[in-house]
Each structure stands twice: as structure tokens, then as C-alpha cells.
Length: 262
Image 1 (cartoon, rainbow, N blue to C red):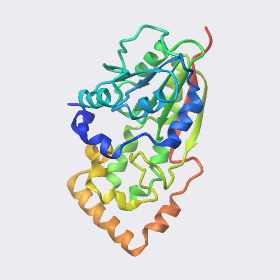
Image 2 (cartoon, helix red, strand yellow; image 1 turned 60 degrees about the vertical axis):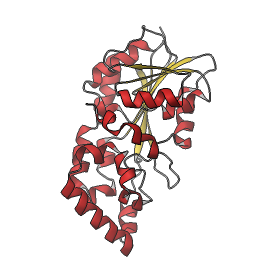
Image 3 (cartoon, helix red, strand yellow; image 1 turned 90 degrees about the horizontal axis):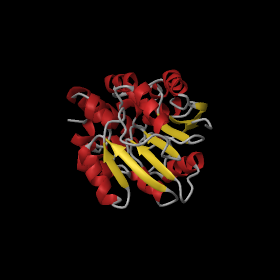
Image 4 (cartoon, rainbow, N blue to C red; image 1 turned 90 degrees about the vertical axis):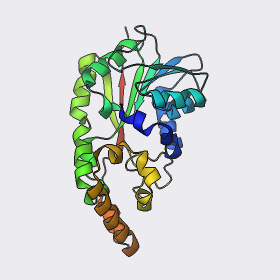
């Protein structure tokens, strides 16, 4: 069973479209009212539905049944399809743009997935990927408390060189990386969303919506890590760890590419 089928109905309890991320996605995609767009690995359609309310006709594709059930309830007017990213059920050149948020690390064959994304986009169309690079994850202060979980997490993340190679190999051009820093007001509770609110990780409901905790964190590491984190929160020592984790290349990043004109 897919990981996100296990998370299923609990996902939207802590996961929602963050306004700052939505704003950046809109800036990169520039959706037109009559354009057709696709969200690759859309999950419960948090960002799909947020973008649809702004502009464009949106479709979403995901492999997880429970996620899509939630997506249908949330946005019944959108077109959702259950399928594998490596075999998209769309005709070639049918979308004016596409996005993929925090999902690249779940794809078994990234070059094939990117090639399929390229195939279904129209010429001169943008692709926007929101992800975290392994080198970014290595700087998270979470590494001090859950080292094995974080190691497994960054090992599953495609590095930017590999992702760039896959994009170029599929034909994408004008590839650029735009850093994204987690802020204290972030509303989508993904892995490092608690950077400035470490107490969030003491909440099991928050952890249940984060794939790294669900997939990579053993019971002993979780118990010991939470105890250590709680001590540092109570003593104030966590503030220094947060300060030391600051890096100029951001906590996450947008990888923006364009399919060239025909």
C-alpha cells in the first residue's frame, strides 16, 4: 500500500496550501483563465484547488486512492485521475503548465517521470517543482534529534544536479533554482515547517502528516528524539540550534523549467 494511502484521511488535518507558496507558484506558472494546467502527484489537492481558485482549468494526478477521495470531496469540479506518474493518462501537449509540490522523492524513476511531464506540456510551457535538496536537509536542526530519520530522508531526495540532468535530458530548458525559506507563519505543516515552532513536533497529529516521521522514524529514535527536543525547548537551548541552522541557500527550493517553443 502506498505511504499516502496509509496517511489518508488524516493528511488534511495538518496540511493545507500555504499562501506564500501559492503566491510563488502563481508567479512562476502565470496561469491564464482559459489555460489548462496539471498538478503532478496532487495528493488531496491542497495546492491544485488553491491555484484553480486563482486562474485556469486544473487537473490532478496521484497514485493514492485515499488522497484522491479527499481531493474529490474538496474540489469536485476538478479533473482527478488515479495513475502512476511514469504513465500519465493524458494526450501529448495538452497542458499550458504543470507543478509538482513535495513529491519528487516519491517517484521510483525520476527521469521517466520528468519525461512524461515534458510530453504532456505544450511548447513554451513552464514546469514548477517544489522540493528540498539533500544538502538543505542536512542543515535542518531536526538532524540533531532524529539523525537516522533525516539521513534516510535526504538519501531519498534527488539532488539538484540529478534533477537538472533529468530535466535537461527530457528537453526542458531555462532551468533555475529559487531558494525558499521556512517562515514562522508557514501554514502547511511539512517536514521542516516547525523550524521556528519546535513544539509542533511534540504533537503526534503533526508528525502523522509528515512522511519522514511515518516512514523513516523508528520507535526508539522517536522516543529519544522527542525527549531531547522537549528538554531543549524547556531550557531554551533550541534557540541556538535554530540560529546555527540558518543557511543562505534556503530550506526548500523551487526548480523552474520551461519546455521550449515548438
